[in-house]
Length: 285
Ligand code: SAM
Image 1 (cartoon, rainbow, N blue to C red):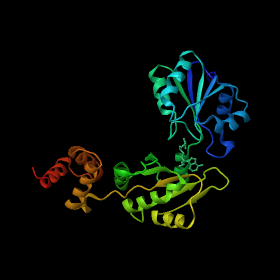
Image 2: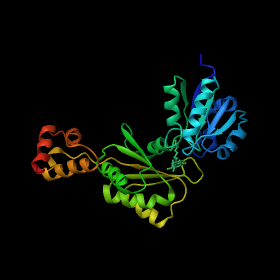
Image 3: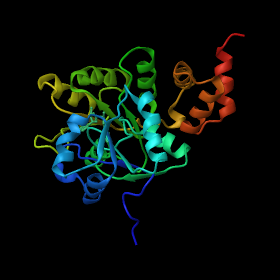
Image 4: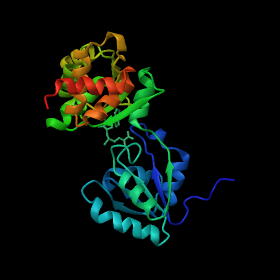
């Protein structure tokens, strides 16, 4: 038998549509209609959806700018045995959206935390792309600029798993330029635009062809990028200079010498000791 929902003193992370309103599940609808309190990223934005399903719970705003003040209040509601749902503007709370801190704090305080699963742009784009999905990573939004952004791009250049990125329309072209610079023209790339909406569109298949497309069509709407993994280098094809360059990239990205050697040993099958020695032969004492 399924458990009674909503249960008192329980936090529910509820997935909501990323476009198509038909994607709100019947379980999410029932929960949101009857939960005591709904923490919304934007109460006005979610008002339309909540009115449509006849939600009666008290609505509180919960977003990145009021997390510090709101978090203790939400925990107190759970303490008082109220049922609490958290929703974001779209998709799964906690994925590039508020929810992560609240889930962690609620668990820490010993409350039950339950996810009512729903759409997520990252996994929706991934499965549409046809790229390898057995192992993948999620980068969300890259830092907007500076050293942190460069370091993340350098790591992406070496990442062998399919990687999912989010980007705002006005920043898409500069992300495509950066990806081309760090990962090359021919790396597979799939861009999913306006998923689940009327103007859903999929553009591929390489960084250069996608870049070319969006240089001719102004990016509008919401975008999720699925970047193919770097081809794993055959250890025998890598010269000492190649290995040193990769070690240096890892170190520039913040790894210690031994972490860089361990990572590259893992990626290439070379001996960690030999890589460490190679690095130190080049480093004057
Ligand atoms: N929590 C959401 C989720 O589960 O997908 C993600 C929220 S994040 C703040 C918003 C970003 O997700 C957008 O900038 C875009 O990159 C991506 N996104 C959201 N809806 C999308 C859609 N319908 N089509 C493509 N990408 C979308």
